[in-house]
Picture 1 (cartoon, rainbow, N blue to C red):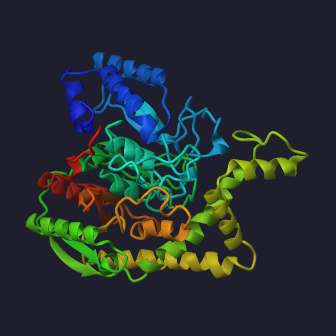
Picture 2 (cartoon, rainbow, N blue to C red; picture 1 turned 120 degrees about the horizontal axis):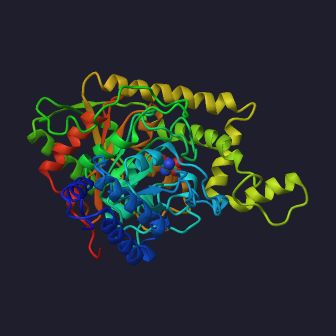
Picture 3 (spheres, rainbow, N blue to C red; picture 1 turned 180 degrees about the vertical axis):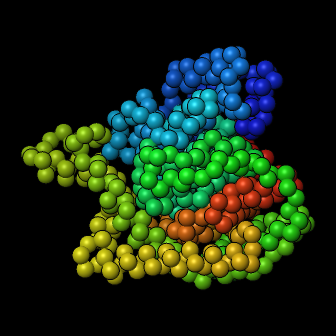
Length: 484
Ligand code: GLN
């Protein structure tokens, strides 16, 4: 049961071959066995999960089931979920039980999909390795000495290890795509504004976007159908006609024009990754696609622009954590200022503090023009590069990450090396475009390699079509790590 896709599980439920309670019991048992080693979950609450499963089975028996009713899913611990501990990977929220549901959570509840647990993540989604989590690092199921990527590392690891059939993630600079690549699963970051950010703990609001992490593009389409949609409680949520993201899955790829950005295939890309991506390009040609070289001349500046804009927004967003209303409060304080200072000094980890300090600096009088405004100008240039590229192609293809999973601790003391893990993903967030990662091979050490597809605005259905056709022709996405 453990490596079945969402689609297969839904079919079993429709055919009466299993129940939601049975499925949830099976996954909960796997979590109990493997999570002590993987550390992919921060919270598991079997009673709550099974109550939701019973309700799903009852809805089905009453003829009120939707397409995914009864299929369980894990949620990144960045989503507020009523009655669940919601920590965002931080000591700052170590005791925060959310009194309400994020829009994404309420969508999955309305679809009848039980929550299997809350997954581990980098603290406040800041990181590329899951090592900044207050709850300890997550291990990569392919090699427990290595990182799963981040910040949605718990979500990626639990899907790769079959502890959940799918999970939610969020992506501010690559946090769905990079861990999906490092764990050998499929993940999609939608166009900015397609999925509501309501109840998703804010990191950098103009970049944050939630999306599905699953075993296949087909599953991502099914999950995006649940997650997407207008929500008046998020001022950047887009009011668009409802679409079926799976509508184009079966289309052949004849005539598809794939853009290959020359900047994505230069120095810094590991040989194994370059080779696997090249083999994927050959496969797409066999499937009827043509390729064209495109250029994203400003993409080399995307990491620099991001590390001004994202910390600036984070410094503002994280000012709400002050020890007063909820979350961590220092036990000893002299007065109000002391309470703020000590609660924040003790509640936040080193990476979060680094970002708050950078953000406060770049927004301060005298530096605002020199850094923040410059970064915003770069952001526009980066978006313009993509617009220019899409005149010549339908979808852009390249590697998701420069290397496969690195060792735990390998980059932990070198923030700049860590930041470069997102060199191919960050421009996509700055431009607000949709992007996805899917497995396309393994390196010499048996570690999964991710292929990135970047679409034009609102082209999720087309991107999923491209990914699905590739997955019909290859079986990389069906490989699973040993021992699970
Ligand atoms: N790794 C990037 C960072 O640390 C992106 C994180 C994310 O997408 N949430 O900010």
